[in-house]
Length: 303
Image (tube, one colour):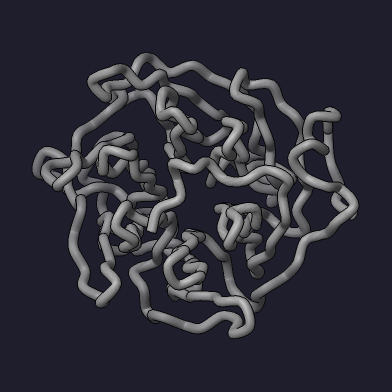
């Protein structure tokens, strides 16, 4: 059975606690970057510390796709089905098309190289939004140690059709921006920081309003139980965030519905499967699934 912490009855409307996680792949150093590709019924994910990119299919299991892989962290599927990857080693957001062709989406801001892009999402207008923490420049296990060129960690947008990366929040807004996702109607953008979950109202012109903190205290400095990292919205607008002890679930008003404890530190998650009710979780040395009673945000079902 699942172990639920601080759970309200509303959490059991989203997930059946009588089930358990299903392990679908194991033997990794630290899994990250899950991205479901519906056209080929495949989950792509990375072993960040192992510097490898993998794919998984039901009945086939996990297959190595690339090694080395520029230490990919976050990933998502673009509107056309291509995959967007955040590469720590290259300090780039890269698009990989179905035929394997690579395109650079973003690698610099105002003439300076980005730090190490962390996570990425795509809005319905085709714009690419990503966070740029600096872990990949000073933690060699997840990147390559090298000098910093930017003096801040930011949140960016690349317009539909490409172009220069645009800074979308004040330079001093984040300590280490991480996971991000839009609400189903794209009126709110959620972004993780070191210990917090923040929300920004999205204005009609695509600009962001000031940040408001939805929840603090989601990490645990000095421990190995996890910190705010990947996130996704479900079809009801609830926000599922990987953080201390597992997956924290919030309703659209920011109320904590409960925490689903995971067997290992959970760094990221995404929905997939034919009905979009299979939650794929990157749990350190493993990848696991969990069936949910709610499906993913329809707007995030690309490919």
